[in-house]
Length: 138
Image 1 (cartoon, rainbow, N blue to C red):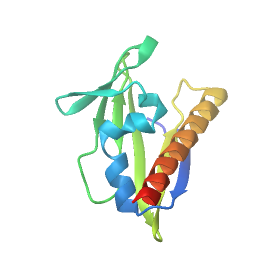
Image 2 (cartoon, helix red, strand yellow; image 1 turned 60 degrees about the vertical axis):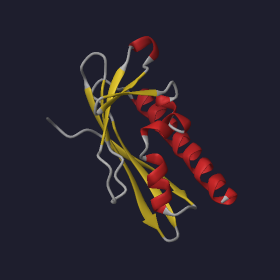
Image 3 (cartoon, helix red, strand yellow; image 1 turned 30 degrees about the vertical axis):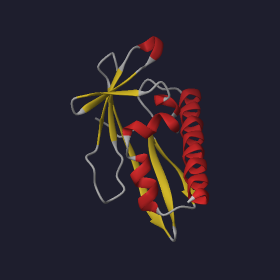
Image 4 (cartoon, rainbow, N blue to C red; image 1 turned 120 degrees about the vertical axis):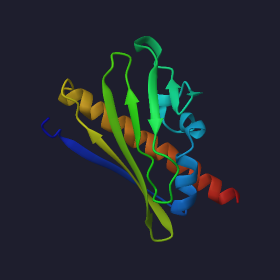
């Protein structure tokens, strides 16, 4: 398999990276900030089922709990295609840097790739808003 075109989408969050990781790594919290999972996730053994709407349900497997800021997840689409998503939260001074690696899938045109990138950027903005607001309340 050849390599795919890639883009790292990132957002700085003014909150301790460990708090951001603890929140972002919980599948139960993802519908609060990850718009692709807004319909919710239901646990199914070690996997989670995401309501995919008209395209059907997707199966999601998350990286095991870890102390390294890794929130990677593998999505198996209804047609059997598998998409690996790398999501990392790293220390950045007193805050966090959240980075999502977007890989352009073989069947994706420029417009769809840009749409996905904008969606992910908005999701990271939402996560930042939740985490920074939460920090202000504590």
